[in-house]
Image 1 (cartoon, helix red, strand yellow):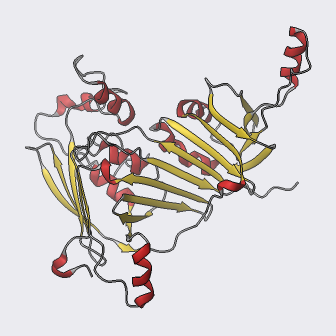
Image 2 (cartoon, rainbow, N blue to C red):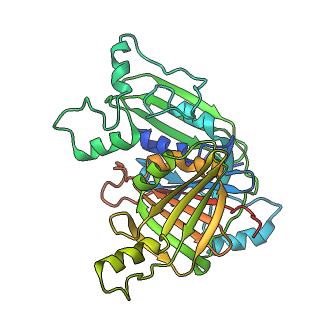
Length: 371
């Protein structure tokens, strides 16, 4: 169990669950999620088919309150060896929860900025009598168009990425006493609104897929605005079978050309620096990206790269991509794909000056194709 006197391993709270919900929805593609708690924050890990690994890094300053107490004793099965390891290693606690249930509880009042899944939730949003007129306001488009002109840019930015034009907010406080105890949530609609207490069963954390990315073996690295990649993936046919990422070094094709026509012909014959190729039943789709700072903020490629991935796995990243501002795409020499999505910064009450940018990372194994 936990420490003497049942001192909670974790106590955390937020005054607005929209930011937290957006981060969690980005990796909500499997039934179970492994939650790792450290002094620095939370790490949420979800995997699929032993091929795709999604990880949300939520640092402690994303919360209004974040208090972590390490478990008093290590499990007896690990003995003194574990106690020695914790001297030099960071202490942590880990457990599993049904992530979709957790998200539905955060949105129990309908003000968390979006549904937990693409399917209708099992919980209906609670509304106080006379709130029917506010239904359309809470479903407002991006940026919350019904806001005052005097609203701050930060508030408009939050509405743009996390939806919801209503000023109603849902606060949340969670408590985790330790192994064997449920995760307790107190969810409240504003300071004077309804309050509900929920308990989510926790499970012992099982070993999950490990996909270490070796930066020394990296063959392709691209940083671009998320909107560019989001628009590209939205244009693809959902029936596509696989997605191929192709990278070529930034050569200077017109180095030996002397006239404008020769330079233009050389550019047309040159290989694209970055290409996304989708293959499906109804044909192929190719989208090329030039090495232009207006498109690719950073491009590193020392040798030609070509690896394919199952499109259904890449499609799992869409939800995180929609709420991110920048994307980092990396591929190593074995085809391991790393997609990191930088999320817009929140403004917590705990430390509004120094804010750490939270992010979501997906790692995916390449398909084994015949040469």
